[in-house]
Every structure is written in C-alpha cells, then in structure tokens.
Image: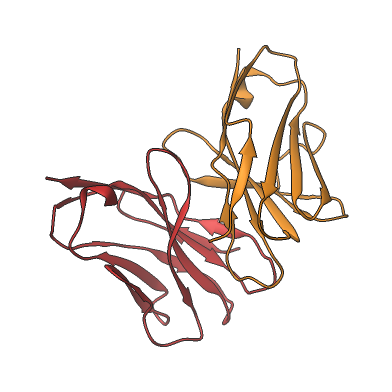
Length: 115
Length: 115
C-alpha cells in the first residue's frame, strides 16, 4: 500500500520569505502522480500543483514550485514570496496512475504566515 | 476550473436520524466520485469510490450499510448516513473526476453534527 508522510505538523514563515514543506512517499509503482493541495480555513480543498512521475522537470506554478526527487521518493513544496493568504493546511497526495485511482493524503502541514 | 458543489454545507440532526449529502459536478460529467471524511486537525480519509451506474467500492473499515452511496448520474452522487450517531459527526468531502481529466475537483464539504 502507498503511504504519504509529511514530517512537519506546523511551519511558520515571515511574509515575503520562502518556505519549504516536506513530503515523502512510499510506492513500488513507476507511474504515478503527486499533488499538493491547500485547505484554507474555509476547508475547500484547492489544488496547488501537480507532478507527473515520468517528468524529470519540476513543476512550477507562479510562486509555488516543487523539488521532485523520484529516487528518494521525495516531493517538497517551495512557496516563494509568502503571502498572508498562503496560511492554510497543506496536504501532499499521491495517485497511482491516470485511471481514476483515489488519492492518498499525507497528514498535512499547517503553515502560518507572520506579517 | 471545474466546479463541484455539496449540499447541505452544514447539518445538525438528532441521533438515529438519516442524513443525505449531495455532491454535484456542475460543469463536467464525473465518471468517478470519491467520498472522504475529515476529523478535526486530521487529514482526509477516503471512505469510498463510486463510479456512475455501478456499486461503490468501500475502503476497509467503512460500513457500507451505514454509509450508503448512490451515483445514479454523471453529475450527482449522494452519501446517506443511516441512523446517524454522535461518533458520525465529522466533515464530509466529495470529489469528482472526469474520465478525460487528470485532476480531482473537490466540493466545499459538509459539516455533520449529530446530537
């Protein structure tokens, strides 16, 4: 079974600074997808960024980028120029392939942004 | 992006009553819908996966006779909590995925409180 581990229950960052959230996973599959979701206080899950395992290039979405290390099974999220609106729970998630399989979520990291 | 709605957003009921939660994909056909449960300060835990027109697949430990899932159309799935008890109080989230899309889209969630 796949597992996703987020070792940082809470992280704090100063506004405008950069923060990195860690995620590791365990799988025997070679084809899979990795995601970072944001859950603000409204509790609506919002997709932040997605990475296909077969792609070597790290995904980037504006201020959000990932460091995908397939051999190490590591998938960290870097948030640059942190904003107050970035404060939320962040969940790392794994999906086995592109055939409708469910997401396996990590335990989450609460990010606090200090003004 | 795609929109998924849930209704109701919040429900309070007495112990022993049944509660129905609707999940709708508003602008796409959802071949697969997922139901998650989230306890306070915890991650999302998959309860079941439903494909349109077929029986739902439940995760281990989830009682299918208590959590009844119906995916009768490509835009609607319902979760009925039968004879709800206080321990069923939780935040329930659905997500929907179209066959042609790689991403799941999440509903805003339903907070259930059983007194």
